[in-house]
Image (cartoon, one colour):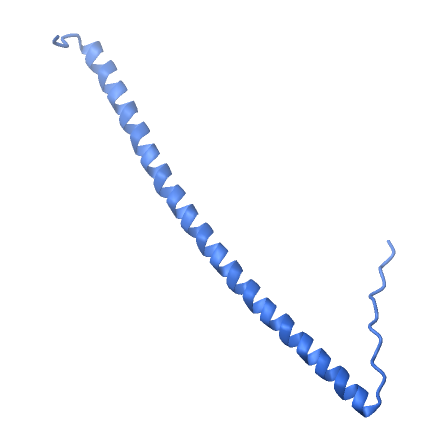
Amino acid sequence: MAISDPLEVVILAIIVGTLAAIVYSLRVLVIMERRVARMDLNIERMTRKIAREEMKIEEEEAKLLAEQRKIEQRLGIKPKATKKKAKKKK
């Protein structure tokens, strides 16, 4: 089965080139997907670290507020009422 017609050679070259382009595109797609997956994992790690730090800050804030209330009670100071922000009318 020899290919003698130049048109057949061109058609075969186009088909082989197209297949090569598809394979290369899939390779690039897989590489990009791996990069996105790594970025996603890094974002998750950072989020967990931030959440842990935030929990520590909230716990410390609660301890400080409790300590402040104790000091105010010992000094006989009435605790300040917390004010809610008024909503702006449009």
